[in-house]
Amino acid sequence: MTATLAPSAGTETQATWPAILALARFEGRMMVRHPVTWLGALGSVAMAAFRLWEEAPVLNRVSVTLAWTMLPLGAAVALVSGWAVLRAKGRTDAHPPMVMPIAMAQRVGGIVLGLTYPAIGTFALQMSLLGWSMTRDPVTSVVWTEILAGPIYVLFAGAVGAAVTRWMSHPAAPLLSVLVLLGLMIAFPYQQEDWGRNIGIEWLSPLAWPQDIIPYEVAFRPAGLHLGYLTGLTLFVAGVATLGRLNVVWPVLAIGLLVAAILGPAQLGPIGESRRVEAMNRLVGNTAELSCETHHGIDFCAMPGYAGWIEEWAAAIQPVVSVAPIERLKGLEIRQYPAHFTHFYEMDPTTSDWWWIEPAAKDYLARNAIALGSVWAPWTSNNLLHGVSIAAIGCSDRADECLGESAQVVLVWLQAHDSRYAEYLFYDAEHSGSSFVWTCIVTDFWANPDGAEIIRDNWSVLTNPATSYEEASNIMGVSLPTGYDREGHLEGACP
Image (tube, rainbow, N blue to C red; front, side):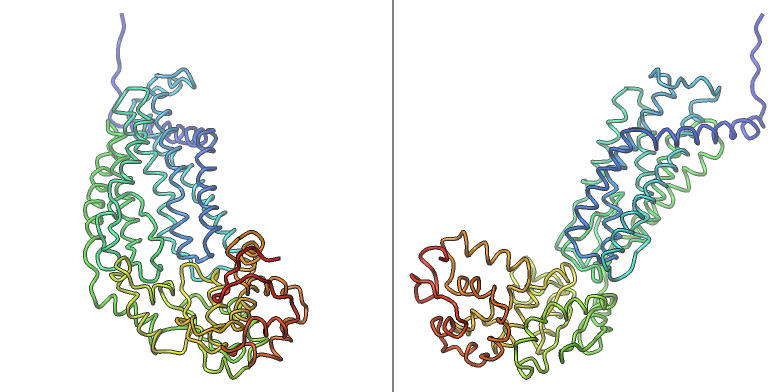
């Protein structure tokens, strides 16, 4: 004779939860140790390091990067979570699940709770990358609501893997969950024409993509609302994964759905003109909240949070300051704007609708200033050198044609102090069949330790539009190449 005893009403609280928590600790450690998790982490590190290396260390943008580059890790955790559910179902021989006689919903609950381990690991990974960025003289400040989207997304991805595998018994269910995640990430493309005027449905994606060419200061990213929305989605999916006899699941499911349903649409909608005007007044114009310093008699003004770059800008123009008469630079201003400077005079149809460029361009054109942007600066020293050099020689930085032959030599010599420009200049002189005569002169002249002194002592003659290449080469004491036309094009490479 056999007998079956039904568990009492209080058994779930008294006995099941300790088992679930013990299972969560076991599954969490298993996930963190799994080779696929490490592979995903390696992919995230590679993506983040590559992206951070090619950008200046602007912490508000770094914060966004440290979230979306966790996507490979999220995909890996979704796979590992799904495989854990398959193991709990007895669909694999690895680590048999019968050591804990609890219901399937409760076993999956332990797996879902165990996702906190890789989520904490994700945050630790982000902090390591952030620490590396901190060693590179960063500017602005960390946006925690952007960063925390990364760990929450890993939780969400793991919950999706658990939910899909729980309710789909096929061994390919974990892989399907990764495809679901991919679909969610690409189903809501960014609409470029709405940037800065409307926050569109792309913010219903679980993880928001960066807005690469838009300065963070005018991006209007609803990061706080989105973090709450993603948290709600995570709770909802976790509830779906653990549906069963656990009484706590239904409140979690309902709260998650309610939070996502409220905060999702709350992110969206038009951005009022008053908000745009307020943002631009803070960054552009005479009342802008800029940090200004004077170096070499030139005023440097940086946007809020970017003052740490002023020393780098001042150092970048030192080659010009050391040779140009001070009166040529008097009254000049180096001013940072929330736009790449080339957009100020390249207003084609692809940029004319970017609302933040027009007020910046108008302000810039009304000043005796050299413009710097915020997205790629300070790694624009050659652009800064170019602008200051043109101003010192006596031309508008939008009228290069006013340069004479000798003045072109001086201009290129000054710009060659930027290592990247010098590398390009010398490579072109050595390998290109379309070099200019001034490239050859500068290449030869670069090795002269008295170059700055010669240019300084002969500044007025060398920058005179009437001074020829021949006269410049005689003053500098270098050999003039042969075989060039009236525009300075060489028939061959430099000798």
